[in-house]
Image 1 (spheres, one colour):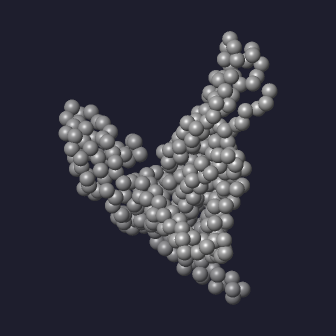
Image 2 (cartoon, rainbow, N blue to C red):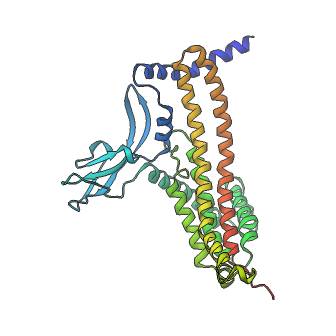
Length: 348
């Protein structure tokens, strides 16, 4: 009984800040859970840290836009955005420019947004990790001494992806050519997923939950598939081994095969985007339930928030697994599609 009372007391102490925040919300605007979730999932021109009493604590990010009217470049922050530029909430807070005739246009925007800043953080982390591993191999003979610790873990991961994914899917002849790209994609997605689970700066940005990022990764795979595909690959698209009446006079199968050239990268893009965005949305929703519970009273607060915290722990552990799974699946499917573009000519 004493242990239960102690546990409840610790739980109330942990949840006290949420109650204070909820009380503050009751004095101000109503808690809008969909708006909070969508706001955290979307890109932004500043890195939001927290809010208290209607004031936002954020890290300003550089806004770089070119005016359509004058052609001049403007460099500023969200707090000092000059006229005629403004943030259009109808278009997810993107920057628009109001011209002299009253019309609005989208200026050339090269701003360092939250997603871009997160990508650069991921790039820096990857450079530090791989350069550190390379330094170990530079000063040690791996034929006489096996790496241990973090370097050993990285070597085991690289060899697993190369042997069981890249080489197994593409084949011995072409695996070394595509290994740098596929390993880079794997570790980039994995690092983005892991750092996105950190709720505070420098984490928290949902990079792989941004469809622009997954589109770019899918296009890179599409280029690798189609630009370097051999003649057997293109022969199977335009003249597949099916009965002639399926190929002419109506090219039914060639059209279907050609359509598959675009559906493969589309599937890669949507699968990664949907899984990562959904996971972050569920975690944010359970977080909002904590504040909603306290706004309904102490009784509801203890009950709903205990449930929410348990579900948050479960979802974070699940997302930790999903971070590895999605990086692995994207790399595996990319390797499989690339392997299909290097089919050997079958004997007649």
